[in-house]
Length: 195
Length: 200
Image 1 (spheres, rainbow over the protein chains, first blue to last red):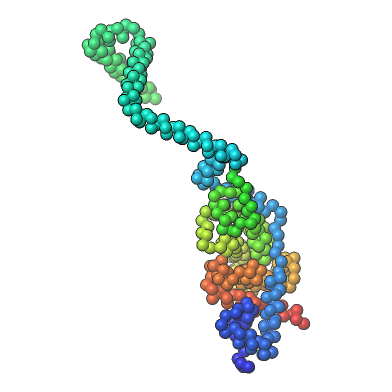
Image 2 (cartoon, chains in turn red, purple):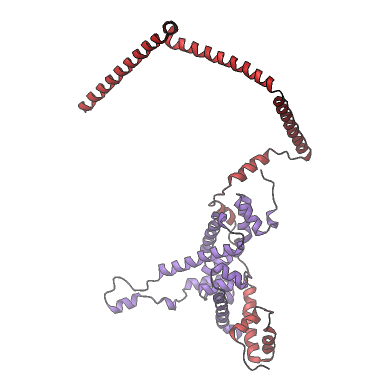
């Protein structure tokens, strides 16, 4: 028998049921040495009592109380995926039909794009016709808007007077704007002086 | 609406991942899964049921509010116990600061008056209320645990009630492994001494 009594950390190795190298001689010593065995038994009683301690339950509704104070943050990519998932049909048959519909639409659009690409001259001609129609429609709308705003006389003068008529109208507009600015400035100065 | 998952059968890491993706049910599952062990640890640390409920709630709120910071290389339970233990220890420290005036009354004029109004924190006596709370916890072992230093208490509870390894306890409490072993050894030794009277 080894006459050295067990050291504190050696008791811990036995209490923790360690199985590593060097534990077997300690166990043997504890079996043979009455003093160490008594100490180990006492310690084992304490450990057993600790391991039998029950867990306590908090009062009902802990999760609700916690969640009332925790804002749940949903990342944008998860929110986007969840929104997309809402549109996916539940039944297998409906999902197959939806996939078929999407595939057919995709194929249709692709075929149309390929057909247009191979008919470049036709597309050019159609674009020209549509462009000239659009230009004349816009010009007509602008002219009718200007007649409504300035009256037919001004428009007539503009059309017949050319650049001279346009210059006269612009000069009149600038004169009126300058006079208005000076008038407003004079009123503001007078108000400041009174204050 | 995302498809319903059987959260109860998922490992912690998966439930945490779902919580990080904003699943309310995953948050609840984490609370449900750990409310008893966390509450038990905190209750045994502070020995007041109402207070333990509040501190447990605070610990869960802290964990769930920062769930995005959780790193999966650590065990979720270690992270949770670490926060719960810190909450309890902080409370115990605050309570000691609030209730113990170490330097005596500021109005004391003589050395006798200073001495009579001061406390020695190293010989902190258990109050009648604390004894009553310890009794509420039950057996002699509970009373004995209550008399350990808070650091020893955390270690011994994590080791023997929560069945954590020394390494996990060291990670949970941010202590060196050697310190954890020493604390557990001293806690066991003190408990043996405190329960000695039961042998007769």
